[in-house]
Length: 298
Image (cartoon, rainbow, N blue to C red; front, top):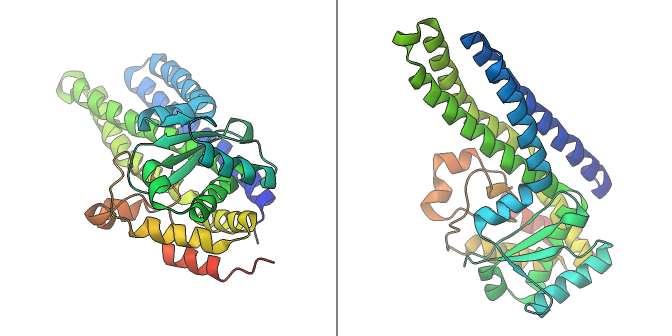
């Protein structure tokens, strides 16, 4: 049975494992390109680029995500009720109060990001704050604080950045393959073309494997830990039910960041699409609600 502490240790190991894999992946492509051009320049570029991106993903990936989603920071002065909810839960959990951001979207949802508890951020959508009751908002906040406590958000945030970089690299290699021109460059052109095709194929597969590696059990663990924090599992259970039934789209949701949210952000036809199902990282809401309602909180 995983605990808060064993899960935190596991997530730290997974984070650095993924970053190491990313470094090896990019350096390998650089080496193949250097062989194709008989020059070490592509390898040097690959090494520098991969090290730089790994550094950025660890230290600044939360800022990148917040910027892309255009999240708005709030303070104790302009969001007193929300800040009080989070602050009280943090006192109970023994965590520093994270920065709080609002996402101007009407779908009720939320996520946590940041590299550690001292640099954590919780993001709530405007729809969640307007459509959920106080006890339900407390349940969601407690769930996200649990992710912070067991360092899930470090793993989630780094994953978003590295998956995005791999996808960008695959497109670059694919374009280089056409620019190389098999007829003009002979064998080198064909090698570049081959690398481009392989990179384009590998990118979504790598993204899928990384996201699958983020175990769905983390959601059950965060649900349970959050329920223990509030001593009221029904609040989070009702919140999850309302979130899952709301049909408002979440414009900023993509297959690379969907796993950040407390519940699957895709709705309607988008939720039923083959690609969305392929990258599904959340367990069924019904199972999570049942687990919460079956909990016995003394």
